[in-house]
Image (cartoon, rainbow, N blue to C red; front, side):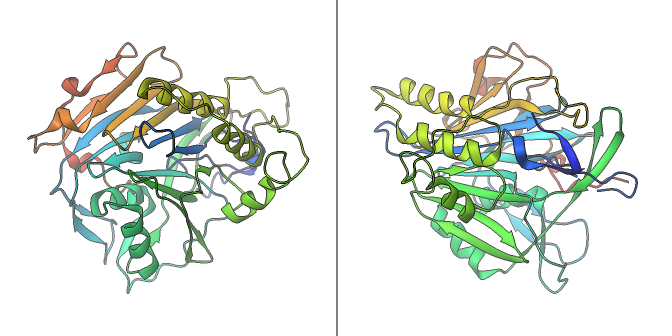
Length: 366
């Protein structure tokens, strides 16, 4: 279970700060994890979980190339036109939507998860600013490979700027906190990177071997901790709690020991089995001092080889997906609201409706 201790946070960009309420989550029991399977002989696959203490409206979007975007609601915003089309999962807070997860037409995937240690530095208005709410979308719009994205991030031509978002907390009311996120990237070659901002500077871990990402502590410390466990150089047995460190170890173990799939169907099922193992079940807190829990509410699975993007709500028995081939020749923004119909199943690409791309912008709350 996730509980609130000093401040409060979760693992995707639905995270938020206020003078009235300022919370911070103890990272002991998070359920957001990202796993990469690149050597299964079938396809490069990326799975991730999202946990949250309340239901949020989610939608799948198809975003064609050419869309013009602004990275901030203030002067000297980063400005760009999308070079590549993308399919993203966007969640809505008080009617304002932004993407935490998605793939682009070139086979690049971006996943945003929570990292408590994140620090993007004081705003430098001489540099173009990019809201963290658009960080994943910016990457998908502009780069075709992990190498391209990493090279650009190293140049530090833009500055990531955090954002404040409200959320309702049972027995407390509406609270806000600053988003504090790190970014995982993968592409259809199997390349991988984890990007964390510490003391205002990007810290980049770039290697095909970096297939797992959870939450705090920072990625280097997660890797060090892994060495203490059986199968990775140590003698500790496989851990079983929902702590980010335990999920990192457990996901690493199961990904390392997955059987070789005989077909794509099995490959998809195997990766989903690991993400489900790292999920947070629905549970009533047994600790009256820490009453707030956050279950895994959805998971996604990107097939970077074939251009498919899968979504699974934990309150629906059905898996749904969309694919780029279904949008060939379509230059309009399209979306399907997944919250209005929990009985959607299978390939829902043909059910997308025309939508306004300006809905996916920097959130601004009064």
